[in-house]
Image (cartoon, rainbow, N blue to C red; front, side, top):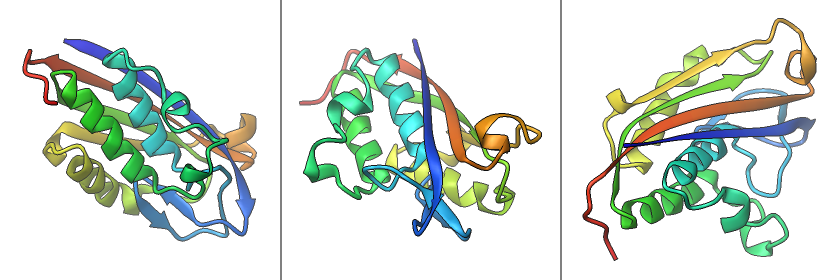
Length: 162
């Protein structure tokens, strides 16, 4: 078994859509980034890469590469999952937390879990997503940005795919 941790942060700005876990959340601001800036998908991808000792998403999908401009982060997560699978791992579970003062995310959590489970080819029962505020403290509390943490547990099967 291998454990991985991922973390991502992006600034909130006007004129961008807010995408979290592949779900568009209605809000007056979105996250700024080279891709769609989905902090949740990025944190999960980094947790999977970390557990499999495959580096990080910045190395795989560099922000200076025009190929990833406005990229769908769920498609990037799917590529990460394929790399992890080829190394012979299965996902036992994913647990993630979004740090955001606003908007309230509870109505969107189930759809996020479904999309993540689908992309990672696992059951929704293997994916947990939570959201919390930081009581108006720090950059997330001041509504300047959002962050996400994710952990995963991978199981080595000795059956990598090519």
